[in-house]
Length: 355
Image (cartoon, rainbow, N blue to C red; front, side, top):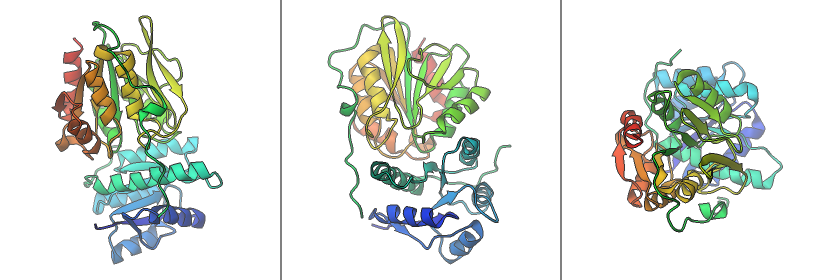
């Protein structure tokens, strides 16, 4: 199997060394000679074009966002942005996604073995996802052991019988990963102000989801916010799972709300789509509608099958409009998808099904 060639661009020697060690531990990845800034990176690229670039934001001589724009407007290469996730950097990282970055990952925080192991999975998965992404020229709008892959069982028991009888109120639950930031914008912008309630898991690091939600809130007719524990799930609002926390749909009487909780990685992610979908199957049943969008891997595939078995209608984004068709494809293979729909028509289909 041809290995994925990765160019690490970061001004910190410690980060370059740590990233190289993490990526080299995966047999599917080959690390090229790293670069301390974009000018050195340009020389490396002239010698050998990488399959994926990991790129820091703040660097001497040229910042990472400027270099990203040059790459994506001249010779597109999949780029994974690296950030320390400071509050000040969150908007910059969201701009990076707008300018064509395939993924954003957190720089490893040294000194915590568990965190480093979890980062190893996240970083390697992000690079693999980026290597499969469809990149295009853009004009920006103004070897160590991998941790075991856990299922949603570690957070919530699998639903038994159907949750409850069907009602007129539908709850929409959505899962997305690579390419999901732009897909979710297209999806949410299409809803009227009285949309059905929506809960979303987008694979995104801690510190970015709030800024992402605020950005969407400013351009959509519906309200969009980062979910907090016990938030009510109501019409005209979309809740986005906070980074690094699992989000579950719960019900108390006639009221739906979300529970935000810690726990191990599920399907190698936290938040996990499988956890959200399982909770929807358990507590909403036929009253839920599931949507799985672009992303690498299989997070959400098992949960979507459970939703379908509980009587929910389920939708997958089609291959032609996905950046990476991994998650929808896995859900289709496992028999969890009721209908495959192009991205631009998903919101319309959701509204039709919720009438």
